Image (cartoon, rainbow, N blue to C red; front, side):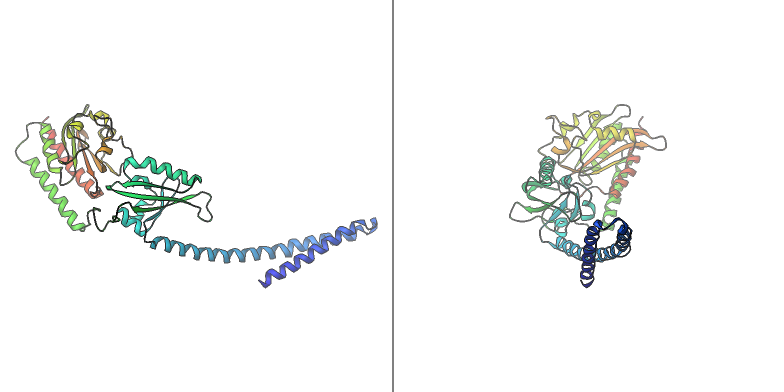
Length: 376
């Protein structure tokens, strides 16, 4: 503070001397060189003394302010993370920038996974467009908004989303703060109610996959199947229920044909007959898997038309409430000859397919393709 006052006094003296030099412009012509020398001296004083002094004061003030800002930001981050309400900070495209601890429990989505992904992707398909539109309106400055949405993994539980604009310090664009609350009497959480299946450990998951592999091997090596479609049906029945809620089997190479569709017994929105009547060529995921020869794993699929539409012209993935899927080509190594494609869906609150499960399915797909190839 003392240095700032001293600098102010020195600057005031300089301003007075400049005023005197301006008044000296009326002196006789012969005395002007002396005035000019004085002006140059004052300019040198500004360049050599006052300006460096100003830079030092500015740098010191900025450092102090920066330190205070950092402490303030750390405090605000701690408060954000410890808020008892589920809160997310998103941009105008609904991409998650921060998700607090209560938010991870509420949505069942890890903060590290959610960051960088659209929050709308965790909602039911029917709510995504409205949520994106309201978020954009809040970011434009049209005022706070509130709407009822549904999490994709718990579609039966209404969630109230309250959106308000927020301008983080030092950033040019407005962000949106989202507060999530259960519209019912009790807030859902990942620890109770219809949340994700608890993680029972790597050993348990590995044992379950080994049991599935054993069941698939037994089915393929049992009584010989008479047709390729029969092989696919056996494989589909092993996978149905214990591994996937829906199993859709397409057989062929140049042109696929649908042979087997197995779905949940209590499914009301989508009938197995409707999926069986589909042309596989109208399912972009199936076509891509058949052409590319690689397994597709999607969690909360973004494109509702990725598996085509049913008889009512509604997207299959939306009607079936698909939360994760595997689309697996059945190919032979090393030539990569296509025998068919298996599509597996998990719906509702069921835990999404993992990379380990996708790798196991890839292994089983080669065994299925080999069994089918023997019937050519």
